[in-house]
Amino acid sequence: MVPPDTAAARSAPPQQPPPEREPAPVLEAVGVGKRFPGVVALDDVSFTLRTGEIHALVGENGAGKSTLIKILTGVHRPDEGELRLGGRPVVFHRPHEAQRAGISTIYQEVNLVPLMSVARNIFLGREPKTRLGLIDFTSMHRQTAELLAGFGITADPRRPLHTLGVGTQQMVALARAVSVQARVVVMDEPTSSLEPREVETLFRVIGELHQRGISLVYVSHRMDELYRICDRVTVLRDGRLVHSGPLRDTARVQLVSMMLGREIAEVRRSGTTAFGAGHEAAPEPVLTATGLTRRHLLQEVGLELRPGEVLGLGGLLGSGRSETAKALAGALPLDAGQVRVGGRTLRRLTSAAAIRAGISLLPEDRKAEGIVPGLSVRENIVLAALPRLSRGGMVSRRRQDRVVEIFMKRLRIKAASPEQKVGELSGGNQQKVLLARWLCLEPKVLLLDEPTRGIDVGAKAEVQALIDELAAEGLAVLLISSELEELVEGADRIVVLRAGAVAGELTGEDVSEAALLAVLAEGDPEGDLEGNPETDPETGLETGLEAAPEADAGPASGPVSGGPDSGDRAPAPAVPVASKPPRPGTDPRPSKTSKTSEPPETPQTPDDPPEAEL
Image (cartoon, rainbow, N blue to C red):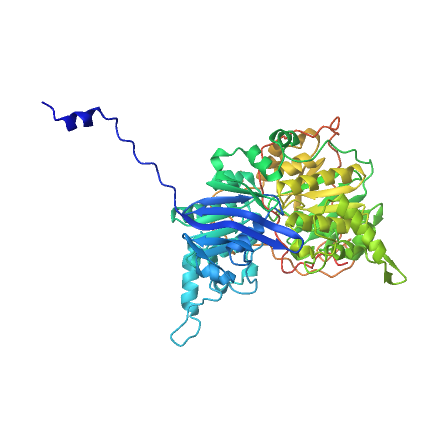
């Protein structure tokens, strides 16, 4: 006879395994609020970062992402709510307190000391000491080399940071963040200045940190990156929490919809970019450049730009895109070459001469070369137009206010008032202020270097629509962008640069992402943009990272029709113009490609002159 308890056990359903327990939170913000004069930056926002996860933080510029990051890292203290670290309430009065607690930050712009060595940057403020209390350079250099080796970098720890490429500098910043035994690493747009190969190296390192159980907060506007590496996502809009949950359960169009506060159907209708139909360009060029040459940077670059046309300038990092724009704007002295505007040759191609001729440049790095953070929105907008707003040597405040009012409305600049400091605005609004500065000069030619870099999808769409509007009004626009679909959908023609020279031109039906990639790939020795890891003798990088090219000092100003290296050589002819036929109707152009990102151009080298003087 079977014992009753045994029979009952046999008839009972099989026991279910216990549900998997979610990782414990390592860092939390609970009901956080933060206010600035005239602005509610955060309103009752909660954020949970779990142990070992990669958490995406997204939202438009001005949504509150930067403020939340600064609260998590001790830059700001919340007005309401609290922070918890490992489940316990914590208060950070200074950033170094958050760092000591294991929270490190990597910002979009590399936040290191350019003139110091790699090793000094990594160990700044916590240098190893000898028994006598002196800095132990031998130990510091050894530890730096070991740390960088884990990132595939063999650069000399004694080398000054500014001599390395921007991608290498970003890796040094990451190495510094990890070297403090961080439990949490906050990354704010870490790939915005990286080559595709550098991005792959960064993602490999992120994977290693993930395996070690380090938690990451990842801020990026690039959807491909988010869906590739992130586990969960938090969406902010207008300073409030909109959504938080697993990223795999959120479709891309839903994510964009939540960021913009628009219906999904409306987002789908808007397409990949905000560019509309093609443009009707005038038959005669307004700008003609021939034989633009600068040693190590440009090799006989030629192009033509017509009124009402958007000309795309494509190329990989170091191809000469930004250098070409700066040369046209008189901000890069040339060894040879010629620029004509409206049929007149600029004999002394300086920044002032270019501005007088009607050429305006929106630089790639708005913070270093564009805005003046300590000045107001009004002062930044009218900065270049002060001579035009003056009478008898006196600047008219009434005329200033009128100009500022017009452009703040036209560009939809969000600010508490025209007197608010521009440094307090979001990145997208800072970009609009800089654009307003040059538009108020009524230029003939507008050079846009990465105009949508580092701004959210909403501000990006506004800038793209504005570019279309300006071209329709007859302005000649040169568009430089690292996002291939932005070039393909926004430009009527695309001139492709490689190693400082024109490698090809795409016109008409040839303007496609596939064709653009094909031209770019021709310059890769393996015929593959990804290539194989190599060690660069200058930077010591094993992943194809390269330092910014060093420019020879050129003349401050002077004729550009010839130079010491030009001899009797005739200038190279301009690239022939064959515009893409206008797209019929006014419907937005459908997306031709899937989104592919390419990082921004090489930054200004130490020998290059400053941005256009006013």
